[in-house]
Amino acid sequence: MATFNMKLYYLAHPTYFWARGVLISKHSSVIFILLACILIGCNSKHQTSPWDNYSPTQVQQEVQIDPLQIKVNALSKYVADFRQKPFLSSITAISILPSEINKVLDSISLAAEEMSQTKYYNLLAHYYLGLGYIKSTTDFIDSVLQTNEDAIAGFYPHHSNVLYVVTRYSTDSIDDNATIVHELTHALQEQQFGSIIYNDISTWDEMFTIKYLVEGEASYVSDNYYCSQHNINPVFRSWPLTIFRNTILNYGQLNPECYVLPMAHIYYQGPYLIDRIKTTHGWSGVDNLNYHPLFSTKQCLHDDQLFSASYFTKFNWNTYFSGMQDSIFAIDNLGELHIATLFSSNGFSNFDSIASGWNGDMFWIFMDTTTNRNTFLWNTAWDTPIDAQEFYKAYHNLLPIKRKDIVVSDSLTGQSYTFLDTVSKRVSFLKVEGNAVYVLENIKESSINTNLTELKSSKIGTSMTKQSSMRSRKIKWMRPFDAWLIKKNKMVNKNR
Image (cartoon, rainbow, N blue to C red):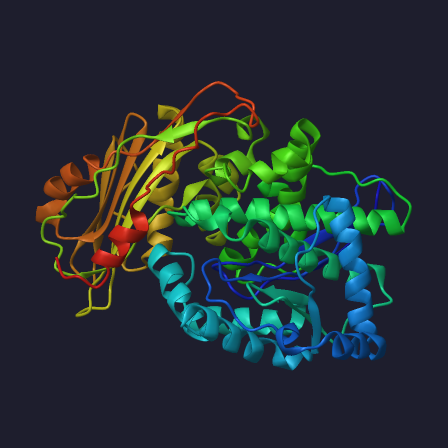
């Protein structure tokens, strides 16, 4: 049996880049690489590269006196040769101290996104709080910022042609050079394809699906580099979410779980997905992902779904929820990965089974500025009525954990259940109906039927078709909710 040494490195910016956690075997049966990586800003404004103002003489002088730059130049050649695509411009290497990581990331994200990393983390914390992943926004932000300082090895800001490497890593180390290879692959992805793969992202689940592909490719290249340096053959395997969670939990590196689990899994499962696609379709198949990417984390988590085509049924964006006078804070979907994380973060050991029957979802969060207690409406679709029943029963057990002030009056029976909140004097309501489960949290009891009817009119769900070759696909995979970003911009902070 192989013995494993594990370290996990997690990332800084939850929207566009995640850090890498990789399993390294002392034997050759399963080989992965320990990396950390960042790819900032899918739609960022162009930032001036330090190379822009350098003459060839200055560049040559800098290369001669900077061992890190020499190493980056050499590894750039490896990445270009392995990926069979040239770099279109040179990459500058900058070394920073661990204590400078959050400051640098803050300044980069502020310049690129017009929002600092710290402010973004604050918004993300309230997002997680509204969904029931965490109990304290302060603890969440502190944990993430500390993780950045402790764990990030390097990062590549979008449109910068600059690769940042943290000073605690040595350019003489194969492991650390693999980190540079990972980041250089991100730079090559950007130079060859720009932001094409990000253009049509509509939901949270889609964004994480894209990360499986983008980070998976970078990890696939760096894994191959690592193995080539040790003269061993890389072996890529699928990582079921339960096994993965238990593995990293044993190393005490799962805090905060809602942030770490989905991000870290990307760097384990992603290279396996890329390996399968490259084995089946070659590098052209991997290139094609930029134009026809996967559409949901369901495809990334289950082998039999990887090459399946899908479409989402019509979604009614004009649904009006009666009596909702609060501001809409978020409209989005969770997808299988984050539904599993919701239950694992709250102590459910069968979280993967609960989420595995996912077939579509959409939620609304309304912020009550008077009581500071949010209303949560959620329409979920499942593969079978059995999957729907499993989720229904599990969510019944989750609600008293998620909303500590609600009263559980009796055991779960029938097809619907109503909880009373002793503080807000409102109710939370669950209903299972065939393949669908409806969740209405913190609403007026008198509005249950009206809001349930309106929630049902927001049709969601997927319909799978037979397996189809990526190369021969003639149509672009349809997005679940194409108008999401436009509608979101119009609806946020709008009183209803």
